[in-house]
Image (cartoon, helix red, strand yellow):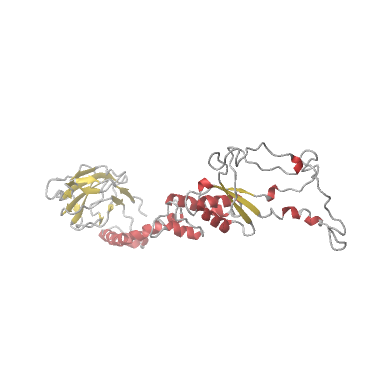
Length: 408
């Protein structure tokens, strides 16, 4: 590869520094366009940019490319180049031929990807003539200048690279192929960005985000903005490691249903009753006034047919109604759009562990004085739990607290 090879972009920050413009304006998107008088483009514009400096040694300037949409009908652009080690590039913007100095090399009209035929020098100037018949104006978005002779000659045997006029001709000839295949080479160079959620192009068609999500079997919700889709897609692989967990299910509900759910599992909180270890007689435990219930031969047990629980199944009955079950609490204030509750159920059915069962509770206000309840008529302010000797504490409604009616 030629060590002097490189390139320069001439439009920096949409300001086109060093460019002298006559009859041309900079559009809001940074494009060079013809000035307009009463909404009609002026017939001609002239620009000159430079000098642009290459590497330390005089290196050949090789290529000038203009990025622009297709030229509108009735418009034309012609490019000029000038090289020198010092001084200035003479031109007269008011003349019929502003770039008549013999140092300027002209490209064919409307050719916007040109080989710079000027001799090698440290500095380069770029000129241009823009014409319109008054119906539209070209939009020159960007210009790129390549220096050095980094062409397909590098891939040929060394015998073709000998100095002489044939080398220069071969480089120019191969530059034609480079110009035609440059887009394909750039696509290959840009291939890694297609695998990066932060850089992959979005939009239709095609949506590379959707293509990239397909590699992970990750569903992109149509309501997500591109920014949110990029963020979630970048975290999809880590989320798969949390599938089947409380945190993973909570995150799926947030992403796909838009709710901040609270998930409770009664199983881990259920323990065997053991006097002296998990309960204290007279403090946390009271004996209920009830008849003796147990294995009574002839009444609740049959000799030879009834067995006490084995050691390996001790306490299993205690967990039958809590194991593999969980409850999902969702605030009704978050269900702002029609269909959100159905979306919550769909996420739960799709992403919960297959062997589990869930109970969905929508938390709504159930006691609102003057609206849903009248104190002293159909609502009573509780005084706390009733006596514990009844064997249980009654759940009571307290003012300013939110009750939680459940919905399957």
